[in-house]
Structure formats: C-alpha cells, structure tokens
Image (cartoon, rainbow, N blue to C red; front, side, top):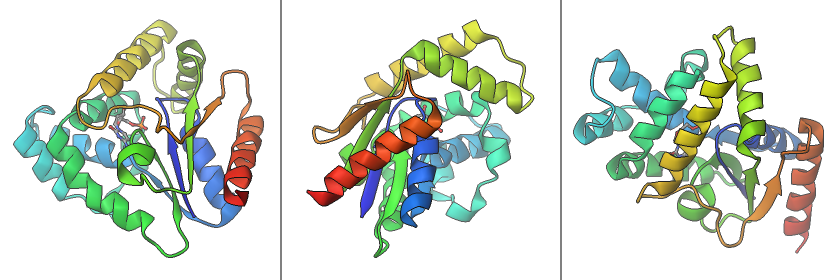
Length: 208
Ligand code: DC
C-alpha cells in the first residue's frame, strides 16, 4: 500500500506520515529532506540557490543516506528548499529516487507537496493535510524554539505565507490537493486526534 501525504509547511503532515508508517509497518520518506539537502549542498559550496545547472548537479549527487537531519531541519533551510523546489529540472532530478523508494513491494508512506499528484499518482491512499496559517506558525515557532532557534512569531507567520505562496504558485508540480485526495484539516486537532483521523481515512480507503 502506498500512502501519499501532501500539505503545506507545519500542517502536521510529517508527524502524521511518520506515525502512519509505524502503525502499518511501512518505510517512510520525508521528501522535503531531498529539497533541503539539495539546498544545503548549494549553500555549503557557496553557490546560488536559483542557478538551475548547479542545483540539478547538487540534486543528482544526493544519496538517501546522506541526510544529516539536524542540519536540514532549520527554518532557513525550509525557505532555501522552497527556492530550489521551484526549479523544474531539480524536481525531475529527484523524481526517480522518490519513485524507487515507493516501489518497494510492501509499499511506503511518502510525504511532501506533489506525492499524490506527480510522484505516486496511483497511490492507494492520498491525504492532503491542511491547517490555517496562524496555527501552523504557532506550531513551527514552538518547534524552532525547542531546537534552540531564536523565534519571532510574526516573522515565522510571514515566512509560512511566503513559502505557501511560492510552493502553490510555481509552474512545476505546485502544492495542490490531488482530485482523489481526502482533505484533513488539523487546525483544531492535537497530534493524537490527527493521527487517529488519518488512520480512519486509510482504513476507509483500504477497505473500499
Ligand atoms: O516539507 P518541508 O517543509 O520540509 O519542505 C521544504 C520545502 O521543500 C517546501 O517549502 C517546498 C519543497 N518541497 C517540494 O517542493 N516538494 C516536496 N515534495 C517536498 C518539499
């Protein structure tokens, strides 16, 4: 069974994907890490994020085992990942890695922005996780504070809005719910309720 989870930053999709993978004994790929790692390579080399040739070379050089999550999770890297994610050739360079991951016999859980629309259009279950921007900004601010980053709620909210806009407006694989995705709004849900709701969606889909 392939479970595709998409949604904007800090919607809860990552946690839901991780918990679904554990619940069903499936492997999980957080595809945001691919874009974050591509951006990290460019920044480490002192190269521009919006240079398509360099960005494609960085994306092609990635291996799934390379990821040092602690260096990739920060707010700055999320923004940088959104910039490289808007380059169509970067998306193309990262496609096979994601499809190969999803092709394991037992299936997998993948989360990102275009899993249900582009990477795994035939996924058995597609969930589009949303939450209002203010709630997402509060969650992200809390998460960053826990990581020891300096946090200013207003700028976190502004970043989230900017990232939503860039991820939704880009021409290649924009952030949009697949026609057959089930929408899950987590604004009023704590994580346990959101995970329960996601499991219910999977059970309903898998049963039908
Ligand atoms: O899910 P995340 O916050 O780690 O993603 C960081 C950025 O990477 C996101 O703002 C846009 C880009 N991204 C993407 O374009 N497509 C994906 N499947 C995952 C992430």
